[in-house]
Image: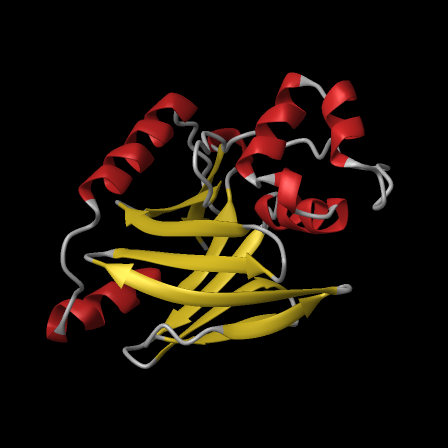
Length: 204
C-alpha cells in the first residue's frame, strides 16, 4: 500500500515529544487498554524523511581510539563538545563514545513492530529482530565488536526502549502512536542532554 507523505514542522514534533516526556505518560496500561496499546503499535512502519530530523553527524569519524580526550577537546567543534559532555567522555574510551553515538544515529527506514503483554518484537532491519520481555528484562546483542543491552518499559500508551552500550552511554528510544503516525524520539540518557532525533513513521 502506498503511503502518502505529509510534512509536519519539526518544531511541532519536538514540542509533542517534550510534552510527553514532561507528563511521564501516566500509569501503565492494563487489561483491554493493554491489548489496544499493542494493536496500535503492531505493523510495518515506513520513515517519512520530510517530517523527520536530519541525521546527527558523527564527528568522531576517523578519530583514533587511543586519542586522549584532552586532544579531542582542544580541536572539537561546538557539536562535538555537546556530544562529549552528554556521554561524559572524560571517563569513557573513544571507542565506547563512538559506539554510543552510532546507536544514537540509528535511522531505520522501515520498522516492523509486534507486541503482546508478554513480549515486544522490534525489527529495525531485515533479519534483525530483537524480542524483548515486557517485564523489563535486558536482552544483550552484539553490534560489530560492541555489546548492547536493551530493555523495554511502558507508561500509559508510550513504549520506551533503553539501549546500554557496554562500558559506554545509554540511548533512550521513545515510541508513541499519535493519530495514524508513529513518532520515535531518540536521545542520550545523560545529564545536560539536549540533542534529540525525531523520526516520523507512517503505517504501510
